[in-house]
Structures are given as structure tokens and as C-alpha cells.
Amino acid sequence: MTHVFHRHLRNTPPVAVAASGMTLRDAAGREYLDASGGAAVSSLGHAHPDVLAAMHAQIDRLPYAHTSFFTTEVAEQLADELIRTAPEGMSHVYLVSGGSEAVESALKMARQYFVEIGQPQRTHFIARRQSYHGNTLGALAVGGNEWRRAPFAPILTPATHVAPCYPYREQRADETPEAYGLRLAGELEAAILAQGADRVIAFVAETVGGATAGVLTPVPGYFKAVRAVCDKYGVLLILDEVMCGMGRTGTLYACEQEGVVPDLVTIAKGLGGGYQPVGAVLAQKKIVEAMSKGSGFFQHGHTYLGHPVACAAALAVQQVIHRDGLLAKVRDDGIAFGQMLRDEIGNHPHVGDIRGRGFFWGVELVADRGSKAPFDPARAVNALIKKDAMARGLLCYPFGGTVDGRQGDHVLLAPPFIASRQDLQKIAALLAESIDAVTRAAA
Ligand code: PLP
Image (tube, rainbow, N blue to C red; front, side):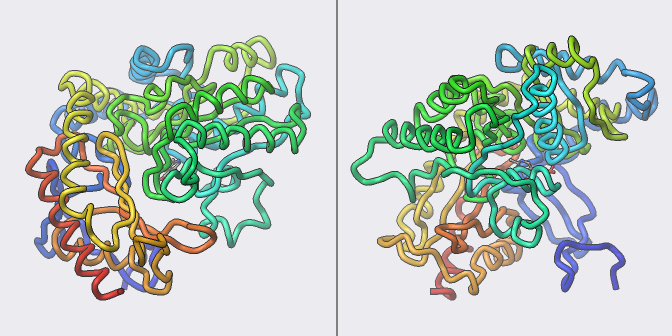
């Protein structure tokens, strides 16, 4: 009998007792190869000695100080490091304890910015379908995962949801990727105009979609066109890089590859690599200036803002990424990983699409490749893959997203950046075995 309120209330997961590098071990002595870094969190793998040492040193020096009284050396150092490596124009870092908190903070920062500059009539957010921005009420309101939203929909702040950038399903046969991107930006413009251009606070999007539709990489030019639409109407662009940021796609920020700079960007997961709960919002100078010249106060806050041990872990993770050249490694090995996946499962009759960048890959499973029909949700193919893969010693991150209002099955792969080519090959091979075993039974 467990007293822990597990997310699945009818079964208790295995007890993890140890982890090192690419491997976790459970109480029964079984070992698991970590192909998803949890949920795209463990960028440096487990028990990295440099991160552990930085955390121990911080605990010995100063384990906690509340931000209403103090700042700390380590929070200042982390913010300096993040601004040094941030997209141009970012001037300040708001340090929180995770992704949902980062998104909530960004939404409130955006709203308060407009209050400060005399546009309090801006009250509406526009976001995308098949997106995920966190489970707290504000983040859930902008999120577009129907399943997660459903029980809470009546108590969520209204937001408009436009189409995600999902070429596999939504780019027309007679459309180039560029034309598709422009069409989507046009849909955003129409949504802004439908609300009233002076009523919209921000457009919120994951730069590379993660947990709801299985790694959606934007088509070329999409985000540039989106940025132009936002600028035209004075709407802020909030990019959520909680999952795809901090090197996951081969550049520190995924938006670097799109040639756009958002007004606010949220990060978490890979920021602390799982060693501590930590997230952040990076804000453009104009937002911070409006607040500092206006009320002089951001009307928000949490008890654990800028927690020193979390900051020490995040700083160490970021330093290791740069010192060990891991961004270049993720770019190079990511190309090889994509090829391994295509070689192993590219021709599988139930693999509809394989897409990704760097160490961030999604596999979309379908009942029928020709029609792209998803599996019947009652078969719970994604849950079966998770179970089967674990039995084979592989941790991957399958889930059901929504496809045309129905559930679709995806597998997300986000290995730690330290994964060797042999690890990547083993991941691809084990996943192929699982997909084959489960889809054979489900077909
Ligand atoms: N935003 C994105 C893009 C995410 O993928 C997630 C989590 O998966 C969140 C926000 C929420 O982060 P957290 O679970 O740390 O609250």
C-alpha cells in the first residue's frame, strides 16, 4: 500500500534506487537505458560529478535565502551566464522552479507589461492546438492538449487556439513548406483581427512542439512570418522552450535556428538537467524597462524563486554543456540518430512519420500508413509501448496526442547529450523491437 499520490492511482511504478550516466536502476535490480531523459530533462545524464560537486558546495555555503530579502551570488552568476548565451536583446532572467511556473510567470509578465504601458485593454492570449505549456491553470489555458484541458475547461481563462505547424498532417499536397508556413501565419493574423488587434497580449508557442504531438519542427520561415504578424499588431511573442531549449535541438535555444527573437522565452527541464527543479523566463529589455520605469515591481512571486542550490545545479549544467562542446555533439550525433531511426523503423508499416532535430525526435505511429489513420485510442498503443520498452530495459516517452479530435500515438526520444553512438544505436534497435511487438498485437 502506497501513500504517495501517484499519477496512476491503480498501479505503483517500479522504485528507482540509483542512476548513473545513461542508466537508471530499480529496486529489483533491473537497469534501464534512458532514451528520453525522463521527459526531455536529463541533458547530462545521471549523477554527473561536476553538477553534484557544485550542488554540494552550494549546500555547504548557503542552502537557501528568500528573494524578498536577498539576492545570491549564484543566482546572479546563473543569470549572467544565461544572458551571455541568450538570443540578442534579452536583458533579465526570472528564476523559478519549473516549466509551468515559467509559463505562468511569462503570461503575467506579458499582461503586466501592457498594463504598465497604458494598454490595459489587452486581455487575450492566442496559442496553438496540440501544444503543451504546463498543468497549472494559466499554462493549461494557453495549452492545446484537449485531453489535459477537458476536465478543467470550464474554469480556464478563454484563449484562442490556432493550428500548430504540423506538416505531416496539415501541409497540403500542393503547398510548399514555405507557403504552408505563410498560411499558418495568416491564420494567426486572422485570429488577432477577430479578437481586435488591440486586445491581444501575446501569441504563445513552443518553438519545437514537444509533448502533445510528438516533436513538431517548424517549416522554414514559419516563425519569421509569425514574428512579423505579432510586430504588425504590437502583440508579444512568447516562445516556450521548456522542453526544446537548453541545447536539446543542437543550439542552446531552438529559436536560434528560426532566426527570430521572442519577447519572452521560457526554459526549464534541460536548464537544471533534472538535478534540481529550476526554470526561468528570459525577458527583452523593453519589458523589464516598462516595469522598472512604471510600477517598479513585478506583481508575482513564489517562495523558491532563484533557489541557490537549483541555481548552482543549473549553472554547472550550462558550464559543462559549453566546456564539453555538447551543442556541436548534439548537432552531429543528432543527424546520425535520425538516420538510425529511419534505418530501424522508417519502413515499418505502423510508423507514419519520424521527425526531429538534435537529440529531440518524435515517432508518430499510425494504424494505416496510406490514410494516416491513428490507432483506436482504446488500444492505448502508446501506453503499451512504454510498458514493453521498459520490460526491454528502455525508457522512452510515448503518449497520446490529439489528431483531428482523436487520440494519436507518438513516441518521444530525448536522450542525454552524453549518449554515445552505440547508445543511440541501441535505443533505435530496442524501440524498433517494441514498436514491432506492440503494433503486431494491436493491428
Ligand atoms: N512547457 C512545455 C513546452 C513543456 O513540455 C512542459 C512540460 O512538459 C511544461 C511547459 C511544463 O513544465 P513542468 O512540467 O516543469 O511544469
